[in-house]
Image (cartoon, rainbow over the protein chains, first blue to last red):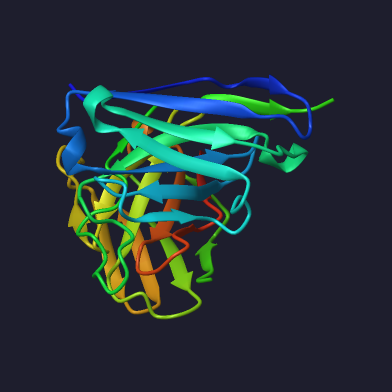
Length: 129
Length: 107
């Protein structure tokens, strides 16, 4: 059974930092590009960031560019999101989600066959003073 | 950025009804569209990808169609388990974007 388990969420003050983790099991982690998708309370879904299998291709939403950094450790089957300079509008449940391709986000590459087929349960980040 | 617009935002329906949700893209996305189902407090679940390909394990009452900029999700014979919020999502170009969601409620 595939499991993606996020951790690291919590309450942080505006301007603060937080590091989210996502531990994967039951799937060939190296065969997946990984993403962070967030959902503000009562709102819709927003893609945040993607990272390809060997970290060669990394993309960010404009809303987090320069503040968030995505990384992964294939030896530990883990995905990370370092979030700095947090703002109230970053308050959301953060999901990690897998795309079954090694090369998501590469320039001049076609889209993957399939989008997010595995999701974690999410971790809540609350930015408030 | 490609904007995804779903209609309606809310839909009231009864068990065994046929339900159709529309998703429009602000630019052509070819067939690179996915549909998700989300229940309260849960992660989204992939239903359909490449506009019309059913994800494994998803009941055949769900179907998707369309290409270019207009897409539909159809649920034939709505079941009690289908009352949820549905999102479309384009993965043709970055940033990948979602529709605002369609909540399917019990009439």
